[in-house]
Length: 223
Image (cartoon, rainbow, N blue to C red; front, side):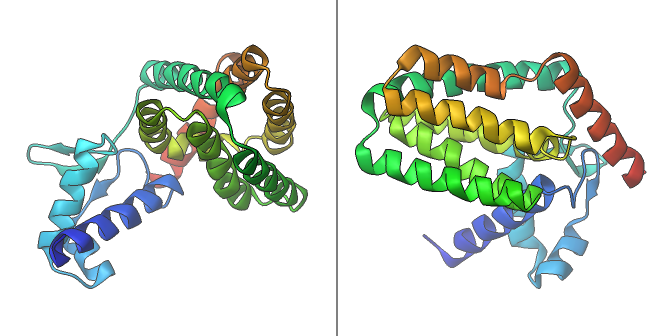
């Protein structure tokens, strides 16, 4: 892999992380010159990184406006979470049958890390171990194609899943839901695990209203 390609991918990951943590907000313009100055590079690898992010749907490149952080309509966001919930349920169903003892041990260790972050009320720390917790379940499905699809959509929803954890009581509730998922996996109960993962990821009713309100608050602050 060329040095330029390596640099572009590293920049892509850095910009994606800025979007995930809310440093760059939905609808915000991405200035190539400003980003090049920030990262101490020329505009060429920045342009390549933005093209990669555009192909992932994380940003949109529009005529005369350039690159902006992608905005998802409430309906589009709901639809993406519906698909995410089903992908995670499928992963959980297979993982309950196929997860190896060492993979289950790793999942339990990540669960304890999530517990420590919950006790410290550390939303960012919780999100980081939460992301790994879910990825461990994807891997435990031992279905490479399914795991790849789940990871791709997980990445696309990162800013919104992270934002969810800032809603009141969501950290504690999320951990409690994880507890049930771990129990299902330990018992090898495919349907219980699938149902608990689906319920854990599904965003509807008040949870969806809270997410949209939090997202609107971020956009108002950026305005």
